[in-house]
Image (cartoon, rainbow, N blue to C red; front, side):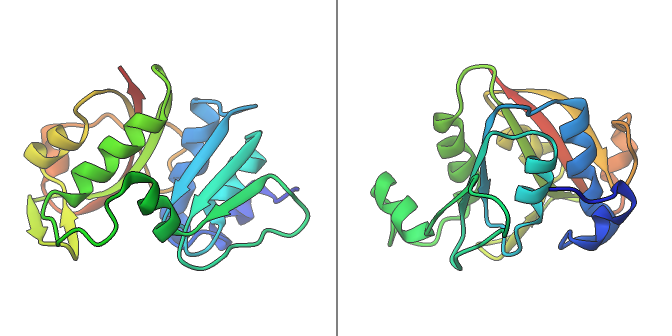
Length: 179
């Protein structure tokens, strides 16, 4: 599987912003690792992972995803995944995002990497629809992890994250290591 680096943004659901995932995989190698993608819709993260040497990727998504030319991508429907946790049908939950990251943490080995893409800016919670992560909720979702780096857009290196980054709105990719 080959794709010129300059064309990577074309397969991303987020255009140039999606290249942050590719660059994070370059800085924090996933070669021969087993990956897990939640909520892909289009399998662009899976392709990036395979291009960076992932051994296998499992995707949790409502629609079955197929990547031609490889048998390294497995699929599981969210209902089947939720049934494993015995939580399907739970009521709406304003801390559902935190619970999902805690579940993912249970799947990671100690020292395992989590590449977590989040909208970041002023703290906003629109109940179960979406969240924008400010300093408080960001700290909550990173509990149990060491924050290694932050990638943004098509910048090939980690950004130096500062307090000023909470002004305005950005889509960031956080690289975290399970403690």
